[in-house]
Image: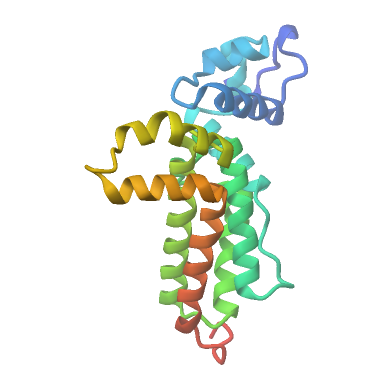
Length: 228
C-alpha cells in the first residue's frame, strides 16, 4: 500500500492536514522557518515523523500550504469599493498579517505551486486593476510596485529595534543622539531632536508611502477601458 494511503498509527490519531499546517505556522511564528523540519514538527505534534507524509508529501508541499494560510488571512479585495480604496485596504491587511508571520515575507512570491487562497488573491488583485482601466502592462507594473512596497516595508518593519513612538523616543535619547553630535552631524541631530519632540510615530509611514504610490498610479489608468 502506498505510504500516503497507509492508516496512521494510533499515536497519530487526531492528525489532519489542517492541524499539521497550523502547527507548522505556529512553530514558524515562534522560531522562524529555516529551522522547520518534518522531525521537529512531528515532535511538536506528538506524532511520528513519517506519519506527517500522510498529509504533506514534502517540506516544500508544507511551505506551500503554510503560505496559503497566510494569504487566507489577508483581506480579499472588495468588488464594492473603488480601486484605490480596495488596494489600500488590502495592503493594510497584508501588512498586519505579515507582522504576525514575518517568516512568510520572503516566501510569498516564491511558490511555484500556489494554493487556492494564493490564486484567489492574485485573481482579485488583477481583476481590480483591469476593471479600473489599467492595461495588462500597467496592471502588471502596479502589481510589482505594490507588492514590492508591502513586502519591503514588512521586512524592514520586522527588523526595527522599536515598534512604537514611545520606544523610538526612548532610543533617540539613549542611543541615537549620543552618536550624533550636533557639530559633526547637524542635520541628523536636528532631525532626531525634532522627531522626538514632535511625538513622531513611525507607524504612520506605511500609509504615507502607500497613498503616494496609489496617487502616482491613478493617472496611468484609462477609466474608459474597463478592463479591455
